Length: 74
Image 1 (tube, helix red, strand yellow):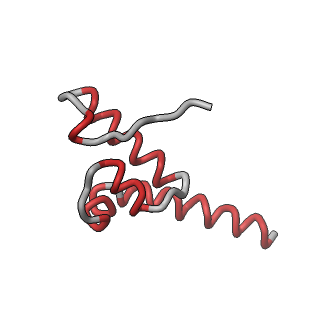
Image 2 (cartoon, helix red, strand yellow):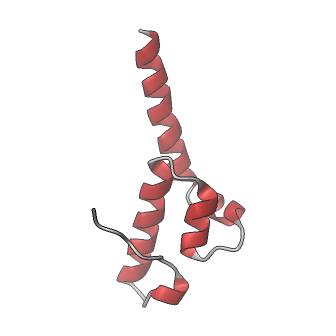
Image 3 (cartoon, helix red, strand yellow):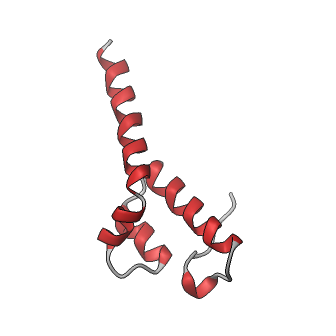
């Protein structure tokens, strides 16, 4: 299995790296990883900042959970 090292300001260089950090954070949060861990990987001191920036990923994860719960009730 492949491993991704920490993504954040200390490990990035302009342009594409910002895009990869955004992609990594979005995918991590949307797949259910906890925000505190994602914030740490990004170098954010406060997980609340991560939640503000990546709220769309939390919403996507909530939609997926709603689908799973709905299917379980059918």
